[in-house]
Length: 214
Length: 214
Image 1 (cartoon, chains in turn yellow, red):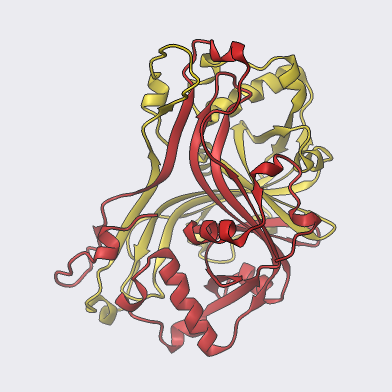
Image 2 (image 1 turned 180 degrees about the vertical axis):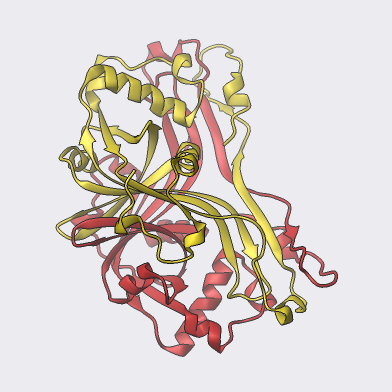
């Protein structure tokens, strides 16, 4: 993977990585990415579900979506996946921080039209969000396939930035101040699955739903 | 607030809103926003903490940050705040969805230099992340203030897009399929606060930390 000025971290470079062994697990844990692009100098941003296969990210959407049609034309995009792990409360307001794992990806979008590849991506999109679900749901029919656009973003460059752990170094005089210091951990809370009222008959909650976690 | 082609929703417009009574609570609940901008046609994206005061979003960062210095020059930006509320499992893969509340904001960045305004923003940035913390931490000193850049993004245009509720309409034949259908709720899980080991003496966990939620 390349590493040019685009992905060079200007601040706190010790928190950065260009290693796919660091980057890919973050991409695989996120549920939603944000896509940045520009049209005639005007920046835009869209949150969207995604998945990764090897060195490519995939987005799916409606063929009727303005955003998807712009991506299908082949444009430069920049995607971010950000996972929040905690709030870091130092004695001073200045030294407060956030624990996070984030990845930024640069690439050019392109539409995927080859049928076998489209199936492979559709399966992966579902499995990325809910592992185990693809074979336990009705797969797309011809009409649904026609309505679905798939976009590939081969990863040209990517970087991760990570902040973990507790309160950083503080001046001795701060540590004596009577303010609580420490970390409030944050993660994704999964609630009790709620069966659809229109469900016909009794279908037991599958294990991949009951034990869903991220 | 304006509403032009930039914020016109092309798809599922029934999920959209241009009402500040819908938009502002989403902006106030999010912890991190994503900022999209472009330099010479190359899109970039950065995740960052933020806060809102009236019709303006504020970002803070280091004066040494390349990103902050670009924003200080006054550029067009597009910001997104996205809250994930659940995964929606329909009988068909095609009808799967995600429950979310998202806001996209358009505006031009500008540096904030006036001292009283800077104090007001710093307080709000901390209070946005951790309500109750500002007066229970050491406030910035002259050296820290010098290292901190504050950027305002007056909201020129904004739109919200929201998907709530259960599985949408499905063909009758799908509803008879033997797959579980329903919603897996998602929210922000707050773990047990972890006191910093370098904390001097015993400081009880304050209520705003013990009962932190989002």
